[in-house]
Length: 381
Image (cartoon, rainbow, N blue to C red):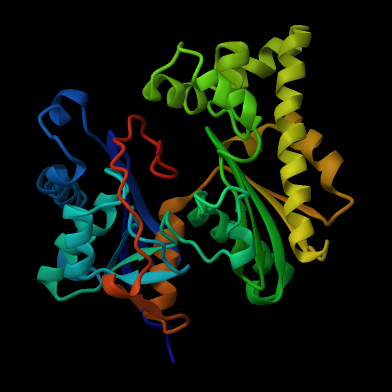
């Protein structure tokens, strides 16, 4: 029997752009980026207020590409700042859109993924999905302990790309992801890592707990951090920016560009080499720590994200962790593909789509931190 062909529109909003892609089954038909200049966004107080403009921009671009909306089978958008969700797909409904519009956990660009998708799909009678949202949290109870009763550890990581590359790795190995233990590390502007046991993400290192990165301070000694914050030199905003955006390589070397740092190293800059290797050292230490969660029974370690293009950095990390398990490298990230293929598996009946019912989800207080960069992953909260 011939395989049914599904056309899926993937939508990934960032703070100043909306990326879209059209897939027919596993085949990419086209990918595009719609830029939103700062002046066009200046009049919007909240991300939700941008919905009509963003949706029309996507529909206009589809028209330019001669894509008939009637040809679509589903829309798959980036999952936003909802209460903690299970991994995999959720079908977008009016209740989810209402939450993201009126009660989002964060005023974050990723909130628009579900809203744009629903706005396009619902009038056509088509399903809209989110997949591996940024709030996926299936940590085991023991992983939630922080040492401070008022503070509970939560999952916050590059879950969409992490699970996508873990799935690709499992396919290369000829085994189902659900049979494997995988440590996955995403290295970009922030560095996060996770341990998947039999396909489920049971613990993570957020970009506030693990390695410093090009723009993040990572895990900082608590007492020194408290003293630093209460030194009188900082407001809450300036201290937050010092940890997120102005930390890591930016703080040490004045740049968030790995290419620039590697050029300095090639030119003999020992200071640049020291701080760049320090980032690899801390990343490897985080990977090894997560391996202990499954008593060292790790089938494969996966390195991904933009920094995985750096052979220097990857080699430093591999030297320190290859005793644990083989290492697979997937440079970059392809979140649009991950969104489309997640929806495809649902349409084919290979996995279910969860129902979003707000009253059945854990409730956490909104922080409503406005995101300032164009990274649709971890928020600045």
